[in-house]
Length: 318
Image (cartoon, rainbow, N blue to C red; front, side, top):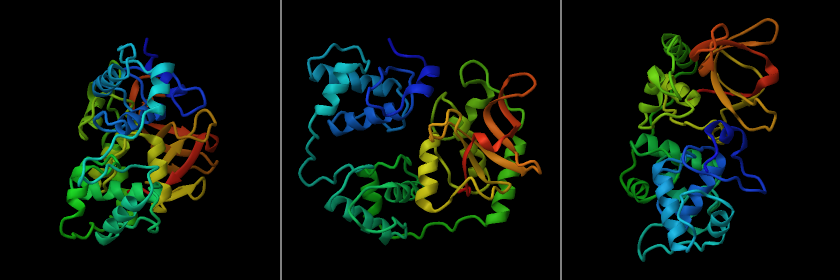
């Protein structure tokens, strides 16, 4: 049976023993399953780390093609088959689908096209690393495409089009102030059920359904302030910040900065909020979504006071 969503938050990470996964799970291991399915030529929809109905259907198709029990659950046999599956051939003349981890002449071509459009990849080396992914995401957002960091047919078509200069980034201080104004306007928004209720508006702005929504909230208020953040997954926010030079580590927090938290000490981001103030005792005041009210326990958008011991790092908003 699929493990619970609560368990998936804690355990669905890339480890030597691949976890059993099913509908309702999410995290890095689900992302890996989606990538392996795509490589095997089985479309999953967006690679977003969310094991939803489209991923379930893709797993069933893959299992049927390999003579496995068709239950839509990724257990040991399905994991093994996915990892052993050869990469599906690209139709003759078609642009290949590219994603993080790929390398070669096609990636070099992609990097040159991104640079032509004014999106810095951090060096043309034929390796699809964090810098290339960050440039792809920014390009996709600028073109109104799904910003999933995967270069498929739609992204290739946009890359082959005319060069349009990327929009200038919002002014630093003013941008942070607008983020804080937008975040304060959302204080008191609550969820009901499982990531639903009023708070459902945050993922729905980006065409996503009910999910752990702390990063959706930060993306929502950042876009309200004139930014282009659109990322539901805290670890990929960290990757984008590092690739773009916006990652600050645990130094020099400023009001309006993004703050990423690491609850369990594994050096992977578990939660995100916005710095509202830096306190004299070294703690920070934040505004966070998908967090419990300190007095009532109600999940929603609230002010919190956080110790630096829980902070993974800070980043410039984008």
